[in-house]
Image (cartoon, rainbow, N blue to C red; front, side):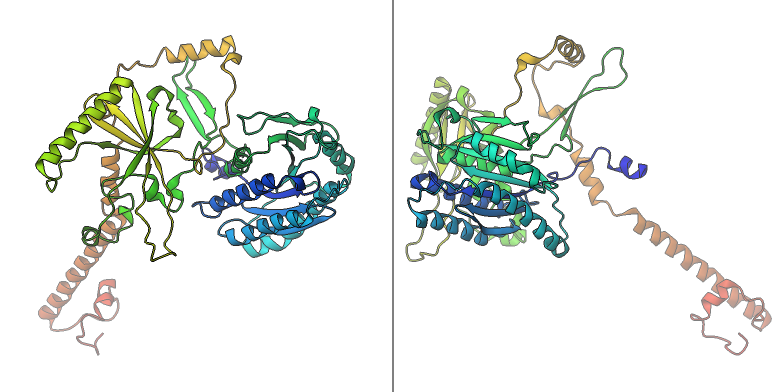
Length: 523
């Protein structure tokens, strides 16, 4: 056991242990009266699962289930795999939409349905896990229940607290009650219960420590499409706290032999477009970002790729560009030297490019543009529609433009802000100051002076494996031994005229019997 622990030291589980999620939508009054909210709710659900079902790598949401709560719980989607299962999930979301609109302006409060729905969700999870684990071999022993309602948060909390002692919560990680802020004073949704913020994902989270023992979270969320999308996109993040992701190693203090290590968690700011279809529409490259998929160089030479066309949408101060939304391989744009262009047009183009760089540097601004896809063929209505990536052009005093990709709405993930810097203690500040004082200060960073050892690693990778060479040496030694024994055997025959007796027979002669078909009677 100790050996296994030592072997696992310095490693962590990929994506941690993601819980199965069951979304319970309270479709009773007053949600029925807000058709636009219902549309936004279903649309944002379809959006997040279009990503979750298509993104490469391990599943960020292993299982999902959808339930509608009206007069009684209605299971629209049993607990199912998310990966490559968009069609089935979309059908359940459509059923949710149709069910809400079919009930119309019903004034049913459904006070007891919320508790009944949570009980049914827990029972369904235990039933499904017993059947799905033997079939798939995937064990998911945690359940997260998300209840979305327009009722008072405290009233829902009270209902859950009263019934929680009777529930089987053995595998329930959390019950998250999402109260949608409608901004209207309803008898069931008092103004004092509505706490909202237009600029944040979650306006207020309270970890209640009543009868639920901190198991129930009340989340107040603005009832708009952007807030709903950000909330659902948070399901794509790795929320596991079983292990840290990164160690920052600083110099040791004067009286300490060990380095100072600061342990960190990593959070994605945007989704990696390389893990999604249409990656080529979110990047620019002189030889196409999909060159690695070409089967051979000869075939690649005969292929053609479109010329990128980026339409400029606006100007932005370079100080207002957030580094966290800029990603991808940087490319340098220069005025073209294409020999096929007329000489006068080429000269004019170079002057315009220089003038553009000069003005951008002068005003300290950057260009924001959007990739234009080729015009679709109207004769082919089934032609695939492709997304439009966004890019930023950063000017340089040497007359060039740095081109980089910038995040768009579909790639952006909720931002989890850190703690305030004001809370650092004097002791920790002194320790960090002492450690930083030992680090060399660079006036500039020259990448030519920073080697990664890539060349040597590639050379080692291309070397022939040593075991094969040792095997060849062993075979050569065996062949030499056989030839030496054969020559001794022949010399003995020539001198005596007789073959040696069968006893004792040397090992080398035994090897020679299948090779030397001589004197079979004597041997």
